[in-house]
Length: 260
Image (cartoon, rainbow, N blue to C red; front, side, top):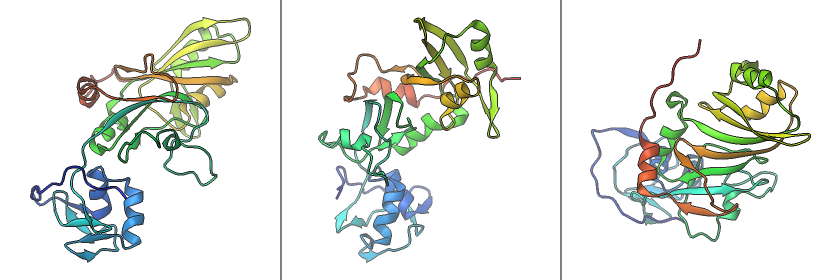
């Protein structure tokens, strides 16, 4: 049962009110879905009275919230980079019993952290986790067009025409899938590595884009988000972000040129 690391006595800010589950999530205590489960189970009280409605309006800065009798204030903000290995699900729990990134972090003595965006089970590389939901939303918001760079091993040798088609994009299941950049990194006898940059992220974006051109993905590794690079962090390991790294990702990126 998570407890507050830094109780807050801040007054309600400008009377702004949100559902109780959202308030718990924004304070960095747990995910919104987890908060809803706690509330429906009768574990959350407001001023000593159990609340069963996750949408019960409360002020973001309101005190008197407890979980299992323990007061909940603003949690210390934590920002983590994790080098996700292939085969882990980015989820707090998996209905099929598969291993998750949280299994890999169980011994890390970290508070609750939510993933900042996703990597599918077969993908690897840079994954951010934080309990600062506002910071996380700023990174994942499609309107920011924040660039994410991937190294992708494909099952064929590409030519310049193929790379151009990846940059032109395709429509798949009603969505436009396009690479902002697509360049050859290196090639072998039968396969090659590409560097692909996205400034938006749709579900299985790169895999679907390549599949539309008959190309299979052998490996997919995210190596950077904005200016933050995975670097030499070993696979399966994590580290805290430095203050300057946190602030660089918080800053709004420069607008990109509109596509015609």
